Length: 358
Image (tube, rainbow, N blue to C red; front, side, top):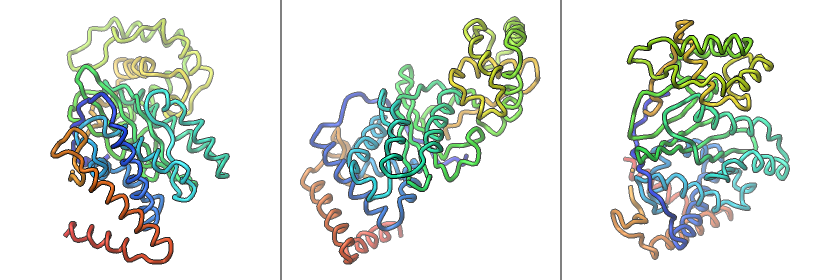
């Protein structure tokens, strides 16, 4: 995964005021409609997978540029803005924050039924991307927000966020399906956070040996494997190890190991896709892989703007509602005119963008 920069995302609690969120939804709708019209629905996926574009998008919508709330609110506004227009724009959004994130598969299936496409591959991509960032990458951030964007042609992107209340920070994970050659080998487009730390990173290129051995271990008789885990727990570990025997409770993972033994997973992707295989199981397998079989996992952390309308909290200046409403109106009229064959307004917007990129 290329390093694209660092974004500081301090945790902010609370909600966007209703008057701002409604405007954010309207402006997001017009911007996404323009992108789909000028380029393609797939271009929207590329933009959302770019952390810098996403951050700038939040700024244009008038939200705090530096807070964790930008992720949840901007995605919520975009999803609300295109509600009912998904088929026209060609982009679909499923998921959200907390309990809404767990409804993502059902939302995808509902869209598939309504718009006549097979949703299974998309449901799998949604589930596995969340599983990777919660289980295969153990960086101290618990996922609480997952949004899956896709087109009817099976192109997809993911923006999801984890929280570490102890540090008071959030970490955002960006995926672009077209770039994912392997779900468990460097799959991210970007991971954004201001803190970098030693993390169990089983999807790093350097974890290939640990992934291979973990799969072989998961296919062993559970009782035999538990004896090896207990033996590993009695070893005196050097300070450099990020996982110790004290992290593993063999009795608690036995039922999961029985599942892996019965399933006999073919590879690491299949292993982590098994229901019940969570962070504890992967920690146990990676520990035995390193201490007994000499195949250490990677401990490398995967984490590697402009105001148009002001910010919610008045930084760098309060949101100017009149200007905001005017922007929505201009975008809406430009798109309506383009649909009638008059593209001059959209061309003017594009010329303005080109001017500022000189």
